[in-house]
Length: 361
Ligand SMILES: Cc1ncc(COP(=O)(O)O)c(C=O)c1O
Image 1 (cartoon, protein in one colour):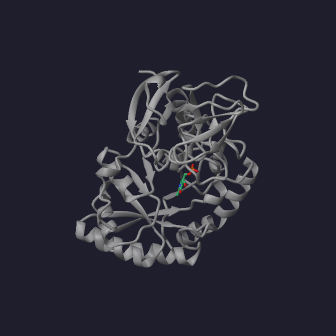
Image 2 (cartoon, helix red, strand yellow):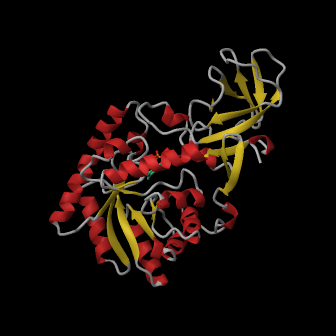
Image 3 (cartoon, helix red, strand yellow):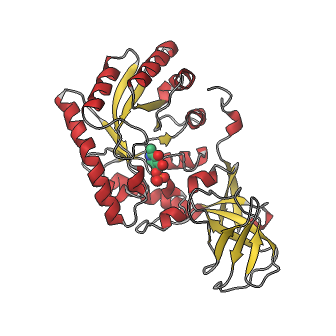
């Protein structure tokens, strides 16, 4: 099968670039003496997770209960849910996975919910305290509030204190590597002091996890983090390409077809709002058409302006686009078509949403 046989829009994974990204990150993190736990929310794909683990990752991170269940069913045995959750039903679903899963908490009530769920399931659930390192999105302030939650976990019936999570979303996409390094070191400093505070209380924090594709280089040198959780590196997107200093290749593209070509300055492709993430102030970029510019033209359509493009584009031509943001783009598709050049080698399912327990809370 070739790319021409695919119905568009279609999500493509260039296998050679993917494998190169995979190995580069695994080697760099291992050379730094740290564990790698890639974030699977970027790809939501069991086949990708398996290959990350084969390349040396200790396991994966997930962002939702559904993702955790899919990964456990696929045989991934060491998973961290990086999002705090609320609600007894979800806690019960997670407690059932406890043998393969750790979770994060940022509130005393959450600890009580998890403890009750783990007791009901007869399981022991690993728990990390999630630190707010300045994003104010999730997490508890460094210092005494962390100590109180850690002590509550230690005093619980069915929870095991495993360590800390210190992830900065703001650090990940700052422009220029030096700015990211400086900001990451700044926000991790209070987290490191918190670890020392815990240790003075006799609480061992074996695991400290965080980092991203944007900050992993600097975070490899952090004496504080024991584990890195970058996600996008394996696929890449326009957002990461634009911030400077990111050396991963564009493994992920969306193939689209030129469906109208009646104007000298532009063509229309069959990929619009429903084909790409729309959360960034910029659109996708054509991989093989430098000098062109994409503009949204509707749910199913996009304009490609050709002013400075080096070649003519005709009706029926296939174009490939780097998505603005990989995670929410992958989330729009059911399959990742794995390709080498024009050849489609196989096709990997993106997480099966219909198989989850979405009807529950
Ligand atoms: C908690 C957490 N860790 C790690 C990551 C991975 O970040 P990236 O995809 O930017 O490498 C994310 C992404 O949003 C995240 O939310």
